[in-house]
Image 1 (cartoon, rainbow, N blue to C red):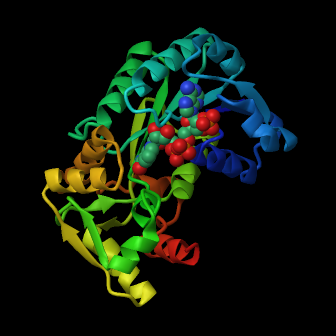
Image 2 (cartoon, protein in one colour):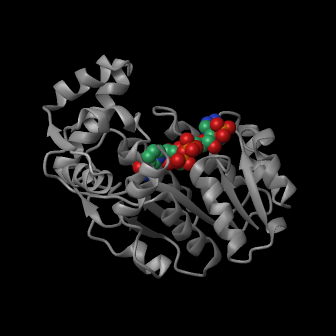
Length: 288
Ligand SMILES: NC(=O)c1ccc[n+]([C@@H]2O[C@H](COP(=O)([O-])OP(=O)(O)OC[C@H]3O[C@@H](n4cnc5c(N)ncnc54)[C@H](OP(=O)(O)O)[C@@H]3O)[C@@H](O)[C@H]2O)c1
């Protein structure tokens, strides 16, 4: 039995689709979700849907019962992710789960990003639990740079994309590629107690702007701002100040190399090159 938490999220759904595509019987997959009503379509396909709310620890051990391989996908609730993962790891120990895969963060061991702290803590908690583990250290979703973090149309209209990433490089990767890598680990018999750094083709924020300009035929330039100014600009667009500061830190971290990896783990796991930035830009422009 393979159990996926946060399975109603974008990544979780893609992992389940990959498992089904690889021939895992639907009844052998557990979608462990906070809101079972959101997983009705998965239940219709024969996937077992169980309630698993990280904030309600009593739901977790029953959800993990009988699991051979567990993929823990953290929630997106900054500041809560570590306590939530601690609950999940305790439940995995109680349910005697033989393998825990954790959807972590690229360069988790060394990253200076504030966002990485909770992933580092979660990894340490899993190691200390004694459970066999695989860390899937996911690189930045390319989709985030192609309109997911804000409306793309006004940016293209203005012809200026802002950020604080300087000339730094991001080894961006699509969710479908990360889901494919997770499915390989969950269906294979690769080694335990291993960390994979999962990144694709590296690009700068200027490369993103240039790709949009080339494909749309409209000029778009990247303007680099000091991190405080970028945070101010985000707050000016209505982003709450603490989140604006966090996002600006996330962008500035590109200059420190936190989003870059030269690891070929992703390509080796999925057996093909990673999806390039250009494909995501094409899809984003089509969706406008
Ligand atoms: N690598 C990157 O660039 C990157 C970027 C952003 C986020 N992330 C991380 O990767 C994770 C997966 O990404 P995604 O795109 O799939 O995110 P997503 O679509 O926002 O999905 C987040 C999932 O977390 C679930 N969740 C929230 N609170 C929960 C709780 N208390 N107990 C159990 N589940 C809970 C949500 O359940 P509901 O469906 O019930 O709301 C949802 O299914 C994110 O949550 C975040 O930690 C990575």
